[in-house]
Amino acid sequence: MRLGVDARPLMEKKSGIGTYLDAMLSELLELSRELELYLISDGEICFPEHPRVRKIRYKGFRFLPNTLYFEFLLPRFLRREGIVLDAFWGTQQFMPLGLPKGCRRILTVHDLTYRVYPSLMDRKLLFMLRLFGGSSLREADRIVTVSRYTRKTLLSYYERECSGKEIQVIYPSATTHPLSEEQLPEGLSEKKYILFIGILEPRKNLDVLIDAFQGLKEGGLKLVVCGKCGWNYEETLRRIEADPDILYPGFVSNERKQLLLAESLCLVMPSLYEGFGTPAVEAMKSGATVVAADNSSLSEVVGIPELLFPTGDAGALREILRRLLGDPSFRKEMEEKSRRRGEDFSWKKAAEEFLELIGGEYEEA
Image (cartoon, rainbow, N blue to C red; front, side):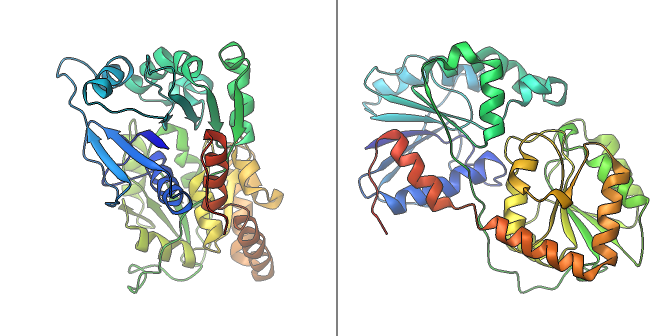
């Protein structure tokens, strides 16, 4: 099977969809000997070389936004290059218009932020998703969502576009990495810091965590914020830089992130909305406790009532953190529950379900 893939998320510093796509493609190649991948992007594709992987780079027009070229001109480009595909995977909610009829079209929907919380999105991306969200769903033969919550939300906004289509929930997983041999950064001690991983943007609601932390500081507790700056982050960044007990290393390597997760008191996800919540699964598979806002897919993915707090309630979050800090038996119990929950997520299982959905075959273990 020749599978075309929207590989634009496979940048050098992957986050979110890029991390998801990298892991899924690696597992798909491992499972299916018949699968040939055509990774298609307008930029550099950061994915290991493989005899069944072909990287295809197209050049858009300077006056035409990338997404418009992808939507309208990519099928023409593929025909011109003589590339015939059995299926195409729209990995980030965009599906080219006008693919050949014999080409199956699979669309993955990660979240509906642009419909649920449009004010929390970058305006350019918001415009493109509003423009092509409905048409991409109509073009798709089969739709994948990453959580039951996302499936439910999708149907509430796009019931007509999804009518008669197969919509399957395929949970992603998270990849753990070898622990870094280096020590924790200066000023950090085991179980004496709270961790946040994510892009600095309004949807992540980091200010609620900062509020909870600044009302808690006990016994040298620190807050570590990992992630690159997104948009409308300036005020949050000022708060971080003004507090000597908040460390901001920015984007960190996978090995450093693994170390920080393993030694943390907990990972906190205070987001207003998540389509899935990959950092939560990554933390749980690393044996770390995850505390999350009780909304969207977060409560579904974390699944531990004692570790959920009402969205935006810094006081409730503070009390969970205080108990984790001051009650060793509770902390151990929550670590074990989080670890067991993390075992429910598997890249192999996700890839097997995806291959079945698109009509591919895979080798049984």
